[in-house]
Image (cartoon, rainbow, N blue to C red; front, side, top):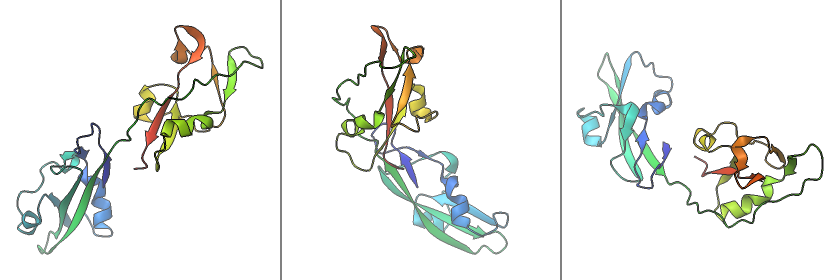
Amino acid sequence: MHECDDNYDGFTVFNLTDKTAEILGSINPVTHSINYYESLADAQVPQNAIGLPTSYTNIVANTQTIWVRVETLSTGCFDIVELQLVVDPLPLVNQPACTAYTVCETAAPIGFEQFNLQTKVDCILQGQLGMSVTFLPEFAQCTEQHQCIKQFTVHQYSSLCTNFRNQSNEYDYGLLCHLNNGY
């Protein structure tokens, strides 16, 4: 189970129950209980089940094993499986030293022009592998990942869009990009 590290400390919140259906498979959840434990010994007894599995913060940095006990309610028979928690690091991003992307207006209407955003991906990634780049018109969308510019090879922006307006030049815009390490 993977979650992104939100502050580079190796710890984050997991919803362990997101794996319940996968763990149970074809087992009926009505006739079985499922509990999560920080140690195999606790799972075997059972004792000290994780009290709030929907909001569990790992206690071992970066990678931790959780033991999941599935028990038949009518018989008490059980099995224990491991669940690996992995805190994935955020990409190390510095402001890339990419040259400003400038195009001359060549066609009507005034204030619109096409930009090939793909030409800036290598500069943005700075040699990092296994990453994807998503272009977004507003900062709030970076965290929400909504309204991505899906076809970023050619895209038009209007000078009428105030979210892009640079106060020093009404035709100079910034564009945010979101890096994702694939998890």
